[in-house]
Length: 303
Image (cartoon, rainbow, N blue to C red; front, side, top):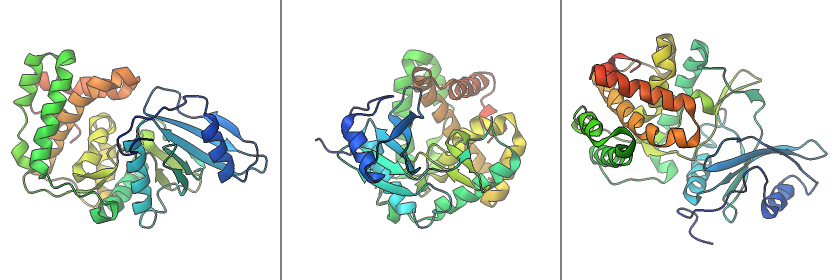
């Protein structure tokens, strides 16, 4: 099998393959398993909840790409201690299958955008995540943050040009000042931090799942989806988050977040429609439309 960090591996979709079934059965004691698919839309992973006759349960997650598997495994190994109250325990991992098994979190995903108490807990969780040293993840990117942002921008605009048009991409590029990121350092970032990946457990605690994009990055990256959606629709949620995280952003922080929101919106419109993520695509289109009317809209709304 190819290098698991970069290989494109098959995912069986709604039906797990025989090797995955045998592996999961070994984790739960060898009994016949009942599988229920939890990821109905197209994407880079397939997720099932399984149980056996004795009632033991697990969540099995198979990655289509070895890199996502490697990043999620590294994140759980690094965070199992410092974030154990906020993440699902990792039961087992199989590099040969690019698959992970987690303990089931009894709870529900938030309805719509959630409420202020939930966003306050999200701020507390994210503050704890960002406090974990990046060395724990073994992810040491030597590229300065400013250069990395510039490279992301160029790649995003090139990918978005067929959908947005080159003239529009050129105007968006002119609204960004990568120099404002000079001197910043990286933290361990979830990089897909949103209510879709939160679970409110039966004990009332907030849990976060889906760490396949987790790596060292700017702390502000973990506010981007929230600022572009829930906080834009309900500013009280942002205030609650700030109370949990510790403090609101200053003016420069707000401008930096606004620039990252524009970058995310440009990136999102190239994949959200293909993946069927209607709300994320609508949020991105709304921000880009607002920028056409007012270049300061990203700072003024949600950031």
